[in-house]
Image (cartoon, rainbow, N blue to C red; front, top):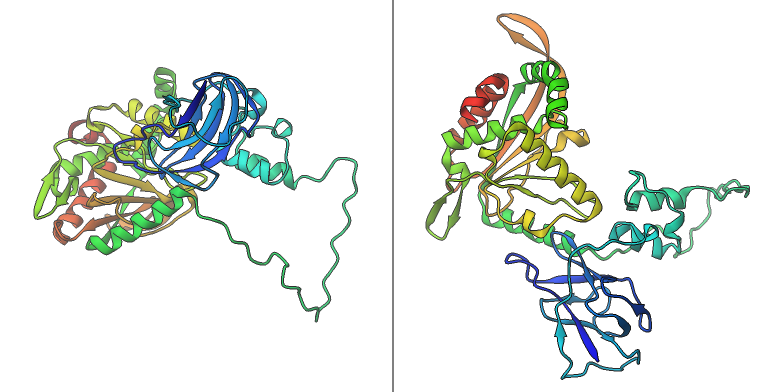
Length: 400
């Protein structure tokens, strides 16, 4: 009996995916639970696994093809004969998108698998940098290593006046991933739709750093996680959103939709583009819960297991370019949200306090907002509120 492999339901906000990679080829035997094909959406990469044992008899949608829910990807034949086409009467089985246990040699991110295949690298020989899953960087580092026992010849210097041939590899054309295409489209949409403006302020991080230093050991011992900066800014942002509710809204036609809940998106850099998982009802979370959720999201983004539901919705976004060394930037709205807070690197700078010049750890903050419903006065006061709460972290217990 032949069973079609179909594209599963994705989510209410994702209606299309791209076939990223077939892990099996026509004629391969498959067991129930074997991962057959990787689908890439604008948010996550999904594994489609076999619901029936047999032989992969037909691949209908090739790598790079765009597909929608219920499209047929291929066919599994329980008998083992290779079919040339899909049987119209073949029953449809919904393929599972849950991650399944894989052999250790194939425990790698989808991007790492594609890089390894393109460079004819055996993933079994590539060590995982984090000891868990092989990433793209692990494969690239493995490729860059010289082969043991082989003396690498020194590169020859090019003649000063040599004319380079046309195929020197000076340019490379790479098809954008679905996620990158979607990111590009949404950024352009935000710029063409919203009246974006950015305002800046700076915050003295002395009090937060002192509090973290005093409480870090006890916090780690009690909750099993470090006390980072993220929880302070999430709490401060919520306090500011309560004071200035139009930053926690969106525009729907001629209406302003005010959100009386606080689903805070946390931007996380991934191999194939930025993703923004959401802290649901973050106002009800403790510092430890916020830190744990962000840590878990970061791990899931790294190993490709982030559930698509984690990316749905969000009322306001926080992005931290400081982790990459940014001193100042103008973040772009995560449309249809009307506000995004940009955090940056902490640098010791001279500041004047009570008439004296002192050195303090300072951070620039940026707020990009939709000027259609948020006035300049509100945006400035919003950032000032965050500044006041962070510089007096004890107040976060009351107002955050």
